[in-house]
Image (cartoon, rainbow, N blue to C red; front, top):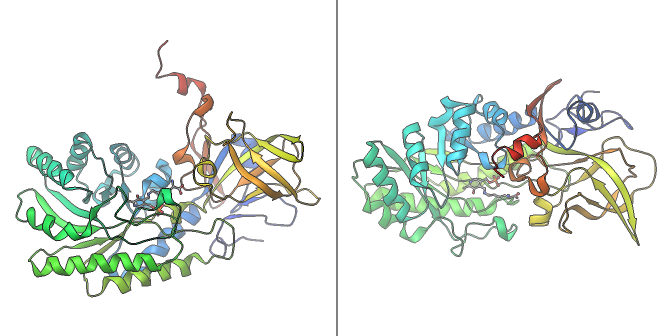
Length: 427
Ligand code: LLP
């Protein structure tokens, strides 16, 4: 049986009842034996498909899909996306270096966001010739003007405005309210654009907005863009014609594995943006991260022990919070499935890692099919903000990463060794 990635929100499926979980056509059991665990596995096919959903849904708008590198910054994934026309949303000089290493030709499609850019980061971006700086304060705009003047470089900028729109998501990843550190109060936008009009090195290229992450409803995106378009109209009547609106990222996925039609979600999102854009005729930029890569990735871990403490059963895996911190940090839910199912009733268990913290858990009181030491489990929807937020806490080398393209699987990041960890240190 062939598994159509297009028809499923996840590329991870059992091709036949009782068989091992596969990523597309590749068995996770085989991958774990070949590359070890913990192991991140990504479906290139799904990532490419998700990119094209955005490109298609927005095609009337000369869109540029700037993938948010922070979601998953693997060089191979950046290259995959760049080769299909994606641009990139970066938030550090380090992320720019990644784009330059993976796809130098895509640097002209880079937008640079972030509330605290250093002069060195700005210089690197100016010299590299990125598309747009998303400027988050007046002080940053002054710094950008100073660096561009010094280096005799042209700087296209967009003010990142804060539209004061509420988006229902976890408080740590909501950004569009006045009380947040992000962006510039939209009411000051007109004045600030006017203050730099005619500057020799600064070009007011666009305006940007990003209201938060893992937002499931399309409505707040439309509301934010409507406020931004109003500002664009006011600027036009003052003789400042912006060429682009950058709508940011933030479109959410379903972490509970419910029915999820990705194409319909993106169309709904595109319609909301369209309704907010009104008569604006310029370019539309978007910065999706999670939506492109989250469901394409799983973290495969081996069960080390199944331990009973009083009434509780703990499934202890060789992956831990240093590999995937989302449950500990945001109380995030990730579905967990045994790679090769065993017979028997599901049991209520906690799935935890070996790190010495009670916060090191993947799931509390979760119904899981029976597992034994040595079995593999897959933590699903881990392609975004998984590896990218991993650490070496407890001196644990970071996991390896594998990219599956059709029937082929290739190692895109080898497992770290202790030499990698100890290298920078001196006794
Ligand atoms: N653009 C900007 C300016 C952003 O700050 C972000 C995410 C994105 C785009 C991409 O948002 P996305 O499409 O991925 O929702 N670590 C958290 C998510 C943090 C999001 C930060 N900013 C998590 O694991 O849920």
